[in-house]
Length: 114
Image (cartoon, rainbow, N blue to C red; front, side):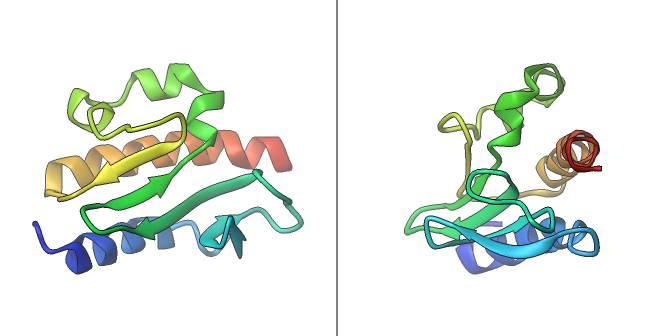
């Protein structure tokens, strides 16, 4: 998959799996999902389409390095900063790896807020 609109749509579908428990928010003007009542950097995930990739912002990954360490090398190669993963493309295998990481991190995020 190399069409950024398709990459963005696929990432949005992955992120939307958490929508029932989270609310819409923004971080630096970027749409995000966060726990109801969360403020500032206490978001779960945010997405932003750029010119060459779709950025997935996942600051919680930095708080749980053990969960991040279990991600596939292909997914870790997409990490372009402390909280950023850059996706110029997204195949089925990478999407599955991302879903598994998000599932693990969502359990942590939920536990922080319950």
